[in-house]
Length: 114
Length: 112
Image (cartoon, rainbow over all chains, first blue to last red):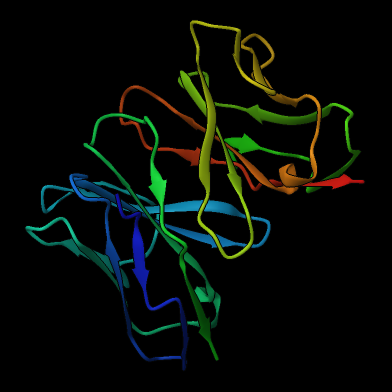
């Protein structure tokens, strides 16, 4: 079974631009969560989508948004990029929402904002 | 306010010895705890978990201990192997929303 895939793997953007990251979950998984990882901060939860609906949301500004499609693939968008948005963005999938059991992570997208 | 804390950014252990990684939490509503392992350029992978109804869970070389009164959990790896060198994250959740709250991670280095 293929794992969670994320595209692109690396991205360099300029302040003020916007970016869209993509995540394809494991086949059959309907829940997709997004995290931001920065050095010394661990993983910060952005949001979770299940069946095309946002189920949970972390404490990030409205510049961070996401969506999920009917095939469970998810996209995350960051508008008006700031230098502090430079981070590794991780996507994780699990079979369904409402359970902590075994989220499966993708390799991440490394975003650098200059 | 960090609800899950891993106070040691790094830990160096001799191969074959025991590695002990620690995690503290502040939210008494947390009732499920997980450890994930992360290699460079890869996403975290699930390692072991423990529910608040238990105080110990064992899986091969990995054992997690939970001390609810101290709001502390630890991961023991015995014996430590070179392939265990990675960053280890502790995460916690409450049944109310299952959102995982993560620690900052501890980088474990196994010396040959």
